[in-house]
Length: 68
Image (tube, rainbow, N blue to C red; front, side, top):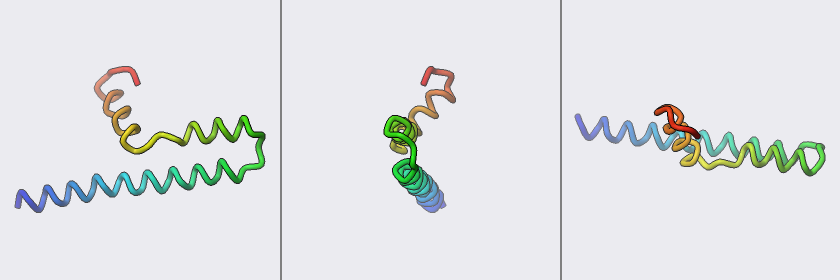
């Protein structure tokens, strides 16, 4: 039973990363396809750049009350 829960939890967590990465790719492609000026495009890309691990670490720090 413990192993089943561990496997289930691992799959759920890895699934979050896959969904996050896909959403990041979509956001990056929207930045690239927008007809805005290059400065706006770079700002958009920077906003959507963090990898899932970076996002998760920042989220945990904020949840614990530490600055991002």
